[in-house]
Length: 70
Image 1 (tube, rainbow, N blue to C red):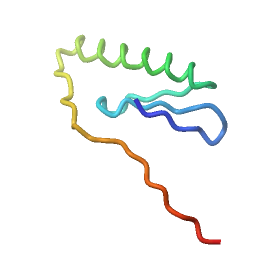
Image 2: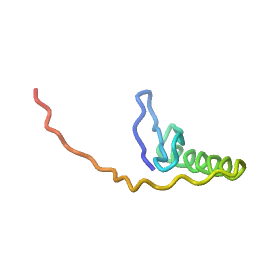
Image 3: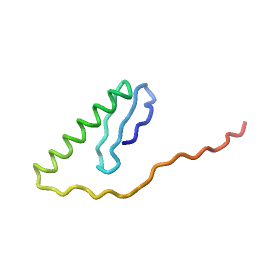
């Protein structure tokens, strides 16, 4: 999962392996609970429509620190 602070407060949560699967929450804990529910709903929809699970892309997530020039 990827969690990012939202501009208006709280967090946005993404499931990168599931295109379009995202949600938010007022706290990190709520965002985690909500993304779990979103994933369950996403997978349920795939089963209902006899669709295949997307393959994991193997993407890696990292951060890069860039000095800020004043």
